[in-house]
Length: 290
Length: 305
Image (cartoon, rainbow over all chains, first blue to last red; front, side):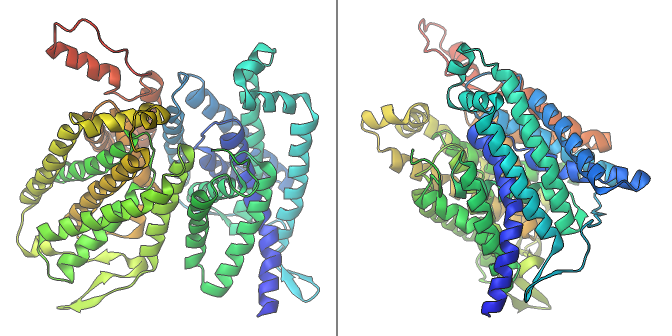
């Protein structure tokens, strides 16, 4: 039993980095930039579908699939920013929530229409057989998720804390008016934020589809659920929190699936979400404010 | 004819959901979890008639009552958070309820049918309305009477001190607390009442469709029920009613467009929000309509932003 628990723990930590990436995207959009983009999950779902196109057309290599997915996600992200945020009057927090829900319906329908709502098999470029790590069996695609997640977060932290763009972004997040006065183009930063989170969406779409084994229309709702849980658990607006929370959620889900069965996995996630919000709304690593 | 009766029944039931979200919204909260109360009401009312031998009215009342009590219980902890947090927390609650019904089994054989909540199969064969020989039109009348009762309560609420209190809490919680309003109590009360309204809708729904399963109370229903008041307008309870009537008829009316339907639907939501961010029946419109009936009033309070 301890052996099983350990094996699930290892897989959970690795898979948790996918949740961390999802939560990171939501954290930057919702928590830092306060852009309540409900279409983010659909963007991820659409990216996973589009990344299959070059494969079907001419047996494209993996890197081209990933790049195609990222390009598709960036285009959709910019479309969402333009349609759902650009023209909304100031001071209406609920309005973008609804416009992005409208966009969610449109994106989902476009994908469902193009594929007849069918899931498409997504080949794993990392091989099907598990890797032996000492006595433990480890899935190769999970290992890839871990590596990609670590690299991705390293780049994001560099971008946010070491570049002009990152400084401007943090300034806009804290005080948009003050940043504007000091010469930061708020609109440009908002657009670039959408580009950044869309690049993440492309990667998430690829790794989600690989780990599930197919591109599916339900992926959008799935990642939205996980993303919100991780974002809240880690603390709204805290990227390190999102990483920690993503890994914790991954481990808990793997252990719960192993010991109680898959039906209780999702209940667990939402029970944690509800409890955290009630007991400690600021999340694990969030600032203690109301 | 049957087709229109069916659409009207769905509109009536969805209007209750829209009113439920609206009631939470006018106390300054946004809930994405009213479909959870809808599910509780549906399962309880269904159990009451199908397994416990109650008749329709007590079944509906019981469903609404239990949903309302759960609303109060959830309201206390959930309302410590607000805004986006509350929207997420309530969505979490809705999902917990949904996943619970995905796992719960409580069946009994009645006649030659297995009746009761049966996990992923859902809760089938709630045939009270059919077995009693109600026609679709007769059941529609029952739905509309229930809706009318709720609408009259909303009408009275919006003219009462409690209604003004709710609006005060929405406008400015701190200011409301300073003039002596018990903000938590008001919000929890609104949440409980909203739960009961959604539960009533659920009870009516399961007897209309004869079954409900966990898929029917998932995120799409949450989105629909939030869309009605936000699109219809948060200025008056007429808003969510208008929103439900418009959006459900639109969904049906656009059927002729086939593939384009969802695109038009999504696009209309986006356009409405860009031009009327507080919905169609917003506070400004309500004041305007009121001013038609009070022609001599000189000073009017500025419409809320």
